[in-house]
Image 1 (spheres, rainbow, N blue to C red):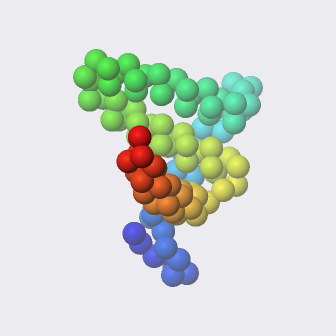
Image 2 (image 1 turned 60 degrees about the horizontal axis):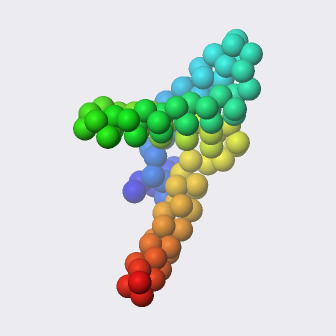
Length: 111
C-alpha cells in the first residue's frame, strides 16, 4: 500500500490513476461518437468480458488472466463514471471482504 501526497492510504498509485483516467476519457469519447450511453456500454463490455473469461478459463487458455485485467479497467471506469474514488472504493471493499470471509468460514464449519 502506498501513501498519496496528503498522507492517505492508496492502493492504486497516482501515475496509474492518471492512465486509468486517460483511458476513461478516450472510452467516453468513443462511445459519444458511436452515440452509445457510456454507463450502459461499460456494463455490456463487462458482461462480454466475463463470458470471454469463463470460456478461456474452461479451455485452459491463460489469456483469461489478461481479459481479467481488462475487466478490472472497465470496473475502474465505472467507478470514475460515477464520480467514485478508485482507492476509497478498494479500501472499503477490502474491509468488507476481511470482515465477511471469516464469518463465512465460521458458518461453513456448521454445515
